[in-house]
Structures are given as C-alpha cells and as structure tokens.
Image 1 (tube, helix red, strand yellow):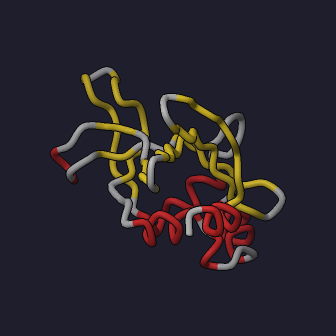
Image 2 (cartoon, one colour):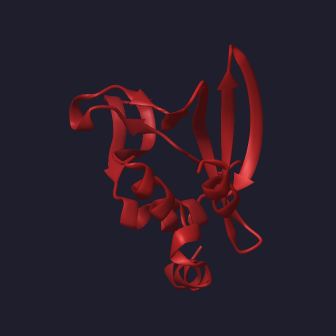
Length: 129
C-alpha cells in the first residue's frame, strides 16, 4: 500500500481511537517488528509509537500486525503487550484496520479461563476504564 493511501486512512481516525494513543495512554511501548528468530538469531527492530498506526494499516491483511514488545526496554524479553485490571489479564495479540477503525485482538484471561475477542480501540477504552 502506498504511503499516501496509508496517511489518508489514518487522517480519518480520531487520535484517541488510534492504536498508538491507546498504548501510550496505557504506558506500553517498545514495540518491535520483524521475526523474533531469523537468519542471524534475532531479526527484528523497534518501531516507534508514532509509526505503529501506519504499520498496522499497511499490515492489516491477512491477520493483522502482530503486537510484540520487549519488556524492560531494550534489555527485556519479547512478549505480547498486556495489562492487568483487577483479577483479569488482557493480552493484546494483533492489531488491524477495518471499516475506518483500529481493532485489537485480545485474550482475556481470568481464573485460568481464556476468552478471545476482537474489539475496536474506542470500545476497549470504555471497557478498561
């Protein structure tokens, strides 16, 4: 997809409904792109929050942009971003862009039970208040 097309799509989304704003507000950063194991053992690089929205739009198909980050900055291990709300853990696995909205695929884990879902960023903001 052309950069111009990506920017046009991004311009139609309010800032508070963007993936980058959502994770910034949660205090989650250090996202990576690429493979966690490649030809030279590790084959990935960091992506800034400012570029995350564009990356999600360009990598929406077939399953979305795989959300991965490093824990403890550059020295940490690689994992899906997650937060804890009470006794529920929310693990964010993929991000997509459809119907002029950003969507997040999540795993909601409570008392050992895993529930998968896909929600718009706007809906998740209300859910996690």
